[in-house]
Every structure is written in C-alpha cells, then in structure tokens.
Length: 127
Ligand SMILES: [Zn+2]
Ligand SMILES: [Zn+2]
Image 1 (tube, rainbow, N blue to C red):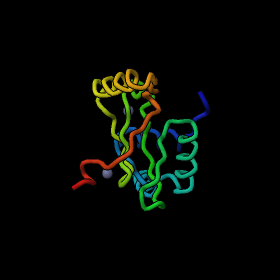
Image 2 (cartoon, rainbow, N blue to C red):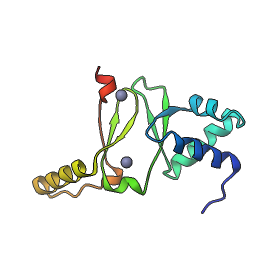
Image 3 (cartoon, rainbow, N blue to C red):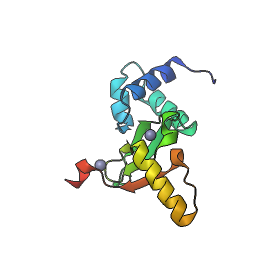
C-alpha cells in the first residue's frame, strides 16, 4: 500500500462518491475546496497511473475527464465509453458474458473483460 497523503485520500473519497460520472479536473477541484487545483491535478494523474482512475478525453480533443475505476468489481463485465461526453458505462455482467462467449466461439479470442472498452455514443448524447 503506497503512502497516501491527506489530499489523495480526500480526492479518492470524492471520486468514489461520484462513481459512474466522468468529471473534469475543475469539477473535482470545486468539490474539494480545501485542496489546491494543482494538487488535485497532480493526484489525479498519480491515480490514473496506478489504474485507480480512468482518464479520457472528450471528443473536442481538449477536455480531459476523470472517473473512478472500480477495479475489483470491473473484472466481470465490459465497459462502454461514450466518445461525446467521455462517460464510462459498466455493461451488465450477463450481457458481457454473452458477448465474450460469442467472440470466443466466432474468433477463438478470449476477451479481457476488465480492460476492454467499446466506444460509441451514450443514450444521453444520442438524443
Ligand atoms: Zn465496470
Ligand atoms: Zn455521452
């Protein structure tokens, strides 16, 4: 277990309370008023490096989004990533398994569920 600073712990707690949401660094910093934006940004990058946070870029190519990565829970399903808003959706486990076995039988390819993302557009962005 690496040494956790107070800022990192608060940041982790904040991201976990917003699980399922992809946030900009500004939104995260606003939610953590007692931590400087530069500390928030540095720690977001550290968490992304260790795989605790998923870092993605919105289709505008500029906005970077951060989302808590549920590693343990995410081994059993695939992820859908919206290319418009950057949101990562956790696909239902049964649907994931069905896709995995379809791919396995058609291509003899074993999908690594925890690290696989299917990109496209979410329901909200299709409206
Ligand atoms: Zn997941
Ligand atoms: Zn979207």
